[in-house]
Image (cartoon, rainbow, N blue to C red; front, side, top):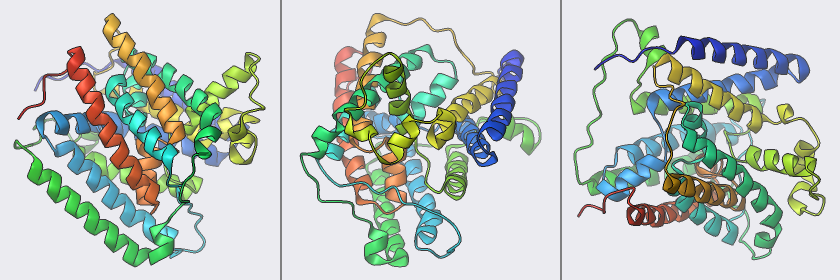
Amino acid sequence: MAKNKINTFTVVLTLLAISLLAWFVARAVSFQQSLIFLIGVGFGIVLLHAAFGFTGGWRQFILQRNSKGIQAQLALLALTSILFFPLLGNVLPGIQANAALAPVGYSVLVGAFLFGIGMQLGGGCGSGTLYTFGQGQVDMLITLCFFIVGATVGSAHLHWWYALGDIGSHSIIQQLGWPIALLSQLVVLAALYLLVKRLSRQETKEHSYTVDGPLLKRVLFGPWSIWLGVIGLAVLNLLTMLTAGHPWSITFAFGLWGTKIWSALGGDVASWPYWSSGYPAQALNQSVLNDATSLMDFGLILGAMLAAALAGKYAPAMTLKRKRIFTAVIGGLLLGYGARLAFGCNIGALLAGITTGSLHGWLWMLAAFTGSIVGVRIRIKMGFDRPVSH
């Protein structure tokens, strides 16, 4: 396989930006926040080198019954659950670990369904949008901008969706105890793994990549196998829990940025209940550098940019057709609005929810996958994909 040329200028520029921001955050806020930012950089590197995403994996399964991506996602859920459940079960009392609990209700059902459509039209999920934008894909900048707009509007409307009702938050760890809860979850994940593998209509062998040189060179320049990506993401998520006290999340920051911008432009956000109390109110009144999710998102973008430049994959130039701009706008709006209604995206709701024992994560996955089927059908109608194979 031909080697891509390293983009030296981008590597130097990105390393400088990472170093300066880490130093500034450590001095202006805290060393802990700086460490959280660097963990975000690690996420960007892993996602880019392993090409790990939810959107493409779901679309490949829907279109071609290629199950490799979903198998990797289920493995990530299992491995992260093994790491998180004992911590949430207070096996190590001195460690602060908080579950990503959220109510099981209409807002999750509708929000995740909209997010599923949006991820297929926009071309990425929460993590996928950030790391592909970091790679330099111009269309994903459009998706990200409207992701922020949608999340902002969703935060203004969230109290309406709350009023529709829910059955409350439910933790299987609290209800069953962490050992039984973990065993039950692993059984379900294993069953799903076997099911999607059985439904696969083609052999999903991994591509063989050859990278000359020692291990360090392979780690730095990639590409990685998707299974190495699973391990890397699980370890970084554990570091996030140990450092920030909660699992990895992404989309809260988008609503925060949009609301801050709207407020700075003179918009009235005082009447939005979501931002009037608790952590949202605190975050709104502080610098974004005090918000762990914002720092991790900044780090993820820069980490992906660094990894792309090292791998010779940084590609900022891109010609966009009107149809692609349209889907990026609509997809971004659906992603942001849906994520706010559903208490997060594929990371903050699906991954964080399921791996910390929250039932809303399972409802999110079902609703979002259903939405993705609709989104793929729309892509076929618009000519982006070939019809589903039979």
